[in-house]
Length: 88
Image (cartoon, rainbow, N blue to C red):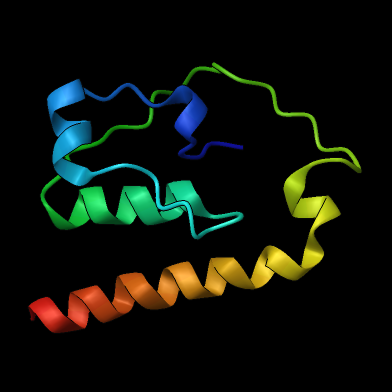
């Protein structure tokens, strides 16, 4: 399934520094937060139609093991929407 993952992203160092580091307050969804911040300052992106990563889902994945952290996904999206509303 195509998607945007930190492990497959190619980003210039200067742009990464402009966006900022991953927010450590998120247990899961930290790349969604980073990617939304990057988009908000004009990140141009492209999804290449090749396989660069095969991800194995198992019982010790953070998203599986720490089901309580899944609420972070909603919080990340809410923060992104709040930023967009603030900048309109």
